[in-house]
Length: 232
Image 1: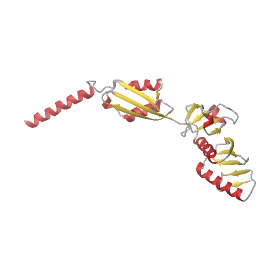
Image 2: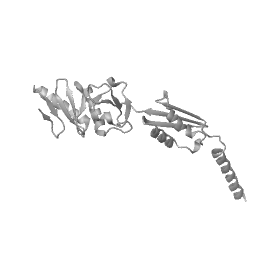
Image 3: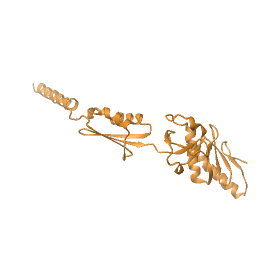
Image 4: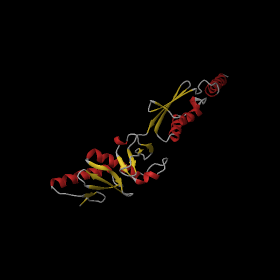
């Protein structure tokens, strides 16, 4: 008899808990806040996505589902953090993508677009002078919703690293699917592979430059696309 009473008591408590959690409305989401980089309000489109969680039971939701939904809806979001706060609040913070480089069709064209390290196009450049620049003619017709190829991302990385380490004349240029060219301050053209590691190629470039300067050689080109550097 005692076991029966205990079992019935547990069932009653479980039913009461289920009612509180699922049907009483105590833990329904009533407040939603959303910020980008903890300072700007989220876009209208993201707000509309999040508003779909209004009146949903907070205890039945998962952070990861909300975060995935936000990142899917917002192309410029690098990541999202969702916090479900008892009794009735949802807070979301979006971390936006950061520009890696500004790409233009030719060296003399001022209109540029920014891309991040995933190749995502962020829009027209507003701070192009502060970013590594890269010439890639195909950017003119590249769909904004489609990330640029990884070889172009690698070229952007090379442009940034080369600008930090060497005196560069003009800006880096993508000449083919596998090749880019930078020109150093004394006119030396450097051919680099877009299939090889950018850091290793520039380390090798520094070694070669040190050697030819020690030897007092005048050179026009250094080609790093092969197993061994070719100096002309």
